[in-house]
Amino acid sequence: MSTSDDFLANYSPPISKLEDAFIQLETLSKDEVSYITNLLNEQVVPHLVPDVSNYAPGRMRVWMPYEAPLDSPNSKSRPFTPGLLSHDIWQWIVNLCAKHQFQPDTCLISKNGSIKPHRDTTYASSWALGINLGQCNWNIATQRDLQVPDHTMHFTGGEVFNFDCKHVHSVTDVIPDRWSINVWSIADTNAARSNNIQGRLNDMLDANENVRIFIESYKIL
Ligand SMILES: [Fe+2]
Image (cartoon, rainbow, N blue to C red; front, side, top):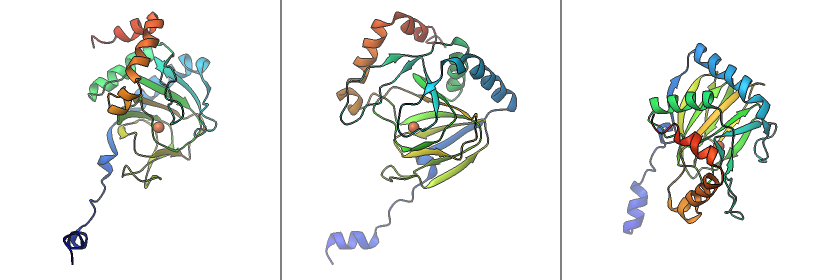
């Protein structure tokens, strides 16, 4: 037996743990769920647009306070664009994220529709924060290199959680009218730097002073 045979004979792969990919932070009270759902119905519904990505059929969505570029291997220069600027909703998100020591830079609010297995792209730091506001099955791969989720959770509404968005994840068995809010910190990884994520974000903020002012008004929190 060579040394490497010895090693392989004794090697057991690390057992993947759910906490490597997913950490539940809290469950919102019914009152909290009603508060934010009412706000979304009042202030977001008029701005919802169909999701253009091919992995979210039927989903309606809006970005706040700006839309991040969904880079692909063939397209790494798409711009950031201004999103919805709603103080009531952003304040609620900022407060919730502060409670869990999470930096909220951008978020996608979506309604209806399932989401096929995917990883989030270059703009996103690995750990994202999710807020689930309706029944669904929420699925994630416990290992980074798995191509399909191997862990499913049945959510009923109000779940707030961190998840590693570079692990393949999906949402299935969604009830009609389910809202979801996913919040990201903008990545500062080698990939983000080589794709000029920060430069593209600054270009958008330079061209849209109202978005910059909106964001800056929350830095004191
Ligand atoms: Fe995602």
